[in-house]
Length: 396
Image (tube, rainbow, N blue to C red):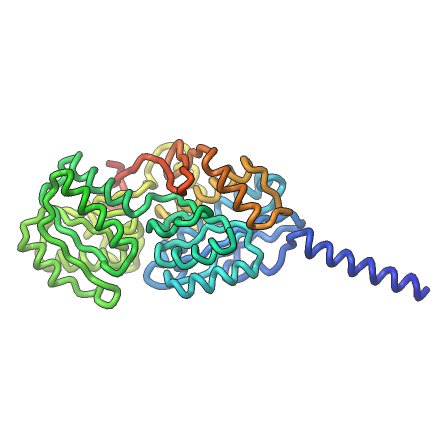
């Protein structure tokens, strides 16, 4: 009898060890995301990331959170990836570098297999440095700084800052929108400064005169009266705003109060301005921006995404960031199926397989069609521009 009890205990211990080492069990996936998909079995692939879920740029982070979760729910309902259920966890980094590193370590302890990196560029550079050490695969939906994907383990869905700067200057010149441009940018922000630098050089090549260059920093981003007065005196007929929506909303308000009448053109950082609390959206009427997503587009992919997203989350965070994250998960699915990855592989083995597969797939998504990737992680797709009309985006 005693021998049987000893044997039973040994078998139970062996089974527990086998489960811990050979299977990826559910674990604690509640974290700060109540909608994580807990799996009933051991075949689990865990996708993690971080973003600003609170603070000034929470519309970005919550858009990414919701868009990714929507895609994961759909994929799991359709059978998962290569027989694996997906689980998703996102940490709040408040768009800060130190908090992004902390988020990476939390996700690493959670046994993350694949990452969507972070939402904003500064945070992604810090997060990505840790991921590169571990050879952890990253596909960031929206981090645009060149340095965000400097490692061979990192890719992105969105355009880089230089690409946005070039595309903006080209669009303004090719469509005759302005010949005298003023710029307000954030000099200590990787996203803003990166776009500004490339826009400036491309504008010169395109014959666009930059008549006023104005900047601000994170410590001085509420009063733009001096910058706006300089722009008014310059005779500019278009203001280029390679900045985030929070600061752009203040500029639009203060420009209106100062009597400055001018056209506005921005990049994807302006996406979200229509969803801000207590913002008069009439101030954004006629604002143009480069963004890969317009909710009123009639293609099948966009109609499906908008319908499902709106049913689950409403309109508040239905922005380009949500669409990019939705596409990111489906891109990971395409690459994972191409590479034949499974839950028994280590995260480093998964990374090696995915980074090869990324250069071999072509994806039609909400934010672009026939999207491909080079080994440097940059996507190839056509840029799109929209204009804000009657409180919504209209394709230009």
